[in-house]
Amino acid sequence: MIAYSNKNTKFIVTGHSLGGALAILFPAILALHGEEELLNRLEAVYTFGQPIVGDAEFGHFVKDNLRKYDIKYYRIVYGYDIVPWVPLDNTMMTFKHFGRCIHNGRGGGTRWQHNILGDKALTLALINFFVARLSALYELGRGFFIGFTRGPNYREGWTLTCLRVTGILFTSFINHFPQDYVNSTRLASKDLFKHCPELPY
Image (cartoon, rainbow, N blue to C red; front, side, top):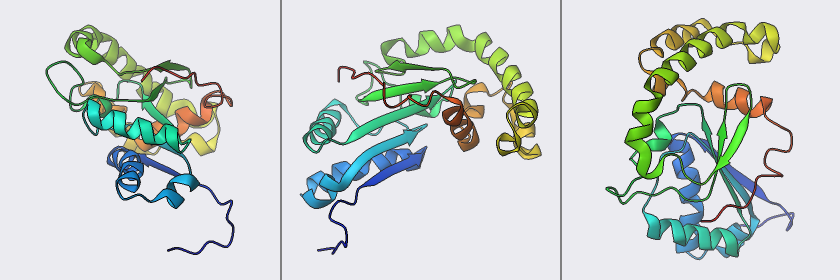
C-alpha cells in the first residue's frame, strides 16, 4: 500500500501515439486488479494520436469503470493523422474506438466526434486524397511561418520542416508529430475540454 501525505491528491495520465494507447490501458489494468484507491485518485486521461486499443467489449468495460470512478477521458486527433485509424474501425474488424474524440484542426479549430471514420473509412480516405495533399502544402507553409506569427515558442526546427516536404506524398504521417498536437491544443479554445459535450458511447 502506498502512503500519501495528501489524501486529496489527484493525478492525470496522458500520452502520445503508443503512449496514448498505454494511457487508456492504465485505468483498465487498475480496474482488473481492483486498485480502487488509485482509480479514485485518477482525474482524467488525455491521449493524443492514440491508435485503437481493443474491441467493443473492452470499450464497454473501460467506459463503465471510467463512469464508476468519475474519470474523464479525451482522445485528441490532429488533422489527417493516420495512427488513430489503425487498425481500421469498421465492420470487418473487431477493433473499436470509444469515448469522446476531439478533432483538432490546424488553426486550433475543433469539432467533437464519437468516431474517427467508422464504416466509411476507405471511402473517406479516397475522397480526402487530394484534400490531404493541399492540407500538407498548407502545413508546410504554416510550419515555416508559425514561429513569426505566433511567437518563438511555436517555432519548428529545420528537421520538422524537411519532414513536412515528404508529407506532401505521405500526408497521413505528417500530422502525427507531437509538436502539431501541442501547438493545436495551445491554439484551441480555453474552454475546449470544459464544454466538450457528452457523447453516446
